[in-house]
Image (tube, rainbow, N blue to C red; front, side):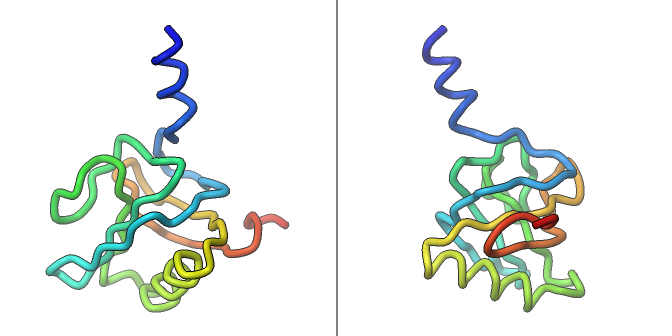
Length: 105
């Protein structure tokens, strides 16, 4: 029972919605030019590009804001600041990012 509670608090189930106060732990540029990102607390239930596992969200190279979002994620990673992301589907596609708070602040 204690183990299952610890697991449920250490990951965020992913779906099309805002996820808040995430720390960028790993950024992977894949062969197609897209980006996979691992956060803390970890996401779960994702289907990322290039088969990286269910804890990675994906930013696809055809996203109109690809360069801006990638820059935000790199800035968050380098500074250790938290980021909020909007996931646009049950497969955890990154649609928007916010540095320095939440989208409604």
